[in-house]
Image: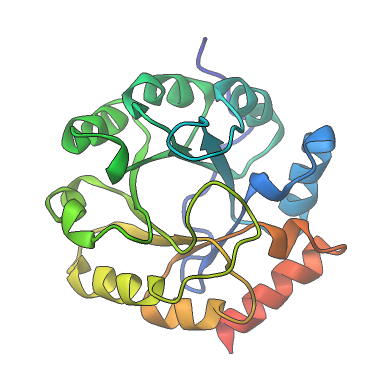
Length: 233
């Protein structure tokens, strides 16, 4: 697979002061994926969250690097690829070459977290680490200096449309407290909506992954505007 040419240079932090909105492709209509991506881009999304599931690490199967390669030329959005897979080291290079801007791997998926985060950075893209709801932040303390993003799962990964797990708020607060000048962004994925997004922002969240709250709405522009209004309230 050859590294694809980007349509344009995606901006990492266009709305960082107020929080970045990242619609999750898991909730999109895959029969009209290009149209779905254009709709959220035009509606004001900052990033596009790509849920990668292998049917082993989580009980679902979604997209691979070929899908990322196909959508890279049609969007300016930052492609935030979340690898919910066993043996992530086998896929990191493929997603980087396909056009991912950030590749996030799970702490629970590898015994060599440091090595694989360094691989992502060596490929010239941003490195992220994710933890499941039942995983302590202690498992990633030693790699916080290596990452550009920490993704806190606020549902058990595998399926969209789940209810938000409140314990994620405490994890976000802790990550914000220990950031101490480190450049990593804090991202939350799972059950994010207009009712809890304000509390997540106050806790320290920078990037908000929203699936059904955006793709399940008939008016995506209105849905994103409501999320931003809740952030600012």
